[in-house]
Structures are given as structure tokens and as C-alpha cells.
Length: 387
Ligand SMILES: [Zn+2]
Image (cartoon, rainbow, N blue to C red):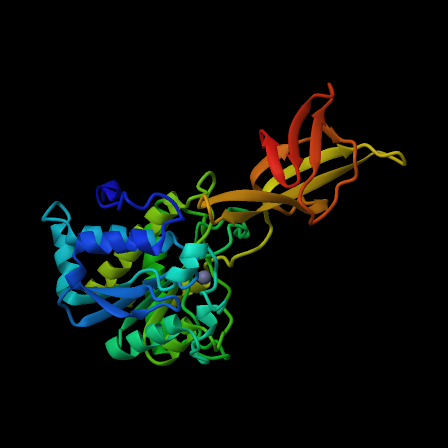
């Protein structure tokens, strides 16, 4: 499958807004979209229905405004389905003749504007299923009640700081959310699990070792858990991290591959012979990963020199004026970090630091080599050089 052919080139990074999405919707044809309601600040939230088949599939993205990866992937998928007849027409026909697809991209447009998780009321929409105080939460709940989908896909981004037990960054994580606190697997949840097994098998060709299962805990306020409870087989998909893919354009492609595979196996009903055990055997998200890890740095001290591993992470800071993201670095942990991994691991036994290393504050760090040449440097959390 030539993904690039269907990629929505208007969406280039994670910082698109409702306006960009609105433009795309008009290009596709606004008449085909149904307005479900408006966000707290009045932006229309729209849904596109494609297909004529009896199996109903509802896909929504970006309940959390700063989790946009799947929104872009949804527009890539829409391009796939609306492209003229081509070498993939057979797959397109199978899906559209057997399924009705309901896409609701960008559930939280106000949060996308400010690149924040929550909506303009500071409500986490995905904790508002019961309270129903956000207009966006009301829209999403109502959409499921109206459509009564057989399958739901709840698309998110997770922290880039998850790894597998094999110390690989998690690019994609999946969960069939539990329908109650017992975490039992009923028929509805079992269907979701079997579809996940198919998606994972499709992704393992591309990113073996980088797929995990999201934390399996019942969250009574969340949408996925409740949709599962009320009879729609629901799948949570989390876009994680990938080396040198800050804007998650690589992971966006894996969203496309996973979703398309899911639609295919649902349309063909071929997921039904999959074994739940393959889902249970997926490694779980773990937190033993840093963005950068310096190994074995010499710390020069008046009392006594010693050696440390130093794990550095960044948080992203959004500049609303320029609509850009910058990285604020801090030292997360020091000491023996031999059971940890990182996106970038630097063997640093030839480097030294001549000041104490402080935790959790904006990083002020200078690493020199044994000729006293400055090699890596951070000032007030900003990376000045290399690293
Ligand atoms: Zn989220």
C-alpha cells in the first residue's frame, strides 16, 4: 500500500487548528459532513459518514487537544476512501460495502488551538462521560447513542516516555478498555481484543518491538470504558514515541495502517478466529525510558569525585503567538540507571561535570571531555549544543 499517495499533505505537524481542519472539510465537501454541535468556544464539531454496509464503526480523535496524531491519520484514511478507482479498489469496496464508517476528527478544537489536553473550560473531556459538563463530551456521548456503533475507535497520543520491557520506545499502544472494575472480558470486549490482535499483527511487520498494551484499569468517567459497557466494542489507540519523529509523522502512518487493517478485518469478519491470548501477551507500557541518557559521567567534587548516569527528559512548551513548540529540559533521575533506556544513549565515561547535578529544575548542565572542551550544554533548560 502506497501510503504517501493518500497522505493529507495540508497537515504537516502537530500544530494544526480547527481552521486547518475546516479547510480540509470544505475541500472534501462540506455537504457530506454533519455538524454535531459546537465546542465551548463555538467551533463546529463535524462528522463524516462513508460506506453502505450494515456494520457501524465510529472513529473519533483528539478529545485531548494536544494529541493530534490520529486526526491527521483520519484525513489520510478519508483520502483513501474518497480517492478515485485505483489498485486498492477491491479493499475499498470490501470495507465500504460491509461497513458504515463514522469519522469525528478533532473532538476538542478549543484545546487544539491552545495545544492543551483539556477544553476551554479546563475540563478533561475524557473524564466527563458521567458529569456531562462539556459540550464536547455531550456531543460524543450523543453521537454513540444515535449511531449505536458495533465498533468504536478512540484515538489518542500517549507520552513519548513509555517503553516495552525490552527497552524499546512504544510507538503504538492499544487497549480494549474494561467495562467494569472486575476487568473481565465479556463478548463485547472480546471482539475489540480480537481486532486489536489483527492490528498488532499488521504493525509487527513494520515496528516489531515497539507495540504495547495500555494500562488496563477501569476508569468509570472515561468514554471508552462506558462505550464498552453499553455494547460498542471499543478500542483505544495511543500514538507514542519514535526516534527523531517529534512531529509524529512516522507514527501517523502506523495509525493509517492499523485503522485500515481494522476496517478490513471487521468487513471480512476475519478477526473472529483470533485468540485473546495474543492480546494478553502484548507487553505493557513501562516508564523506564528517558529522552537522553548519559552513562557513567564523572562528577568532579571538592569532597570526592564520583560517577553518575544522568537521565534527561524534556517537556514541550507551546508558544501561542508563533504557534511553535520548544523543549524545556530537566534532569529526571541520576545514579545507577542501568535498567533504563533512552531515545539517545550517550556513553559518557570520558566526560565530566564540575558542578553538582540538580534534579527536576530546568537543566543547567555542562559536560566537558578530558581535554576540557565543552561537548554538551544546557542553560535554563534549553539545549545549547549537540545532544
Ligand atoms: Zn488522550
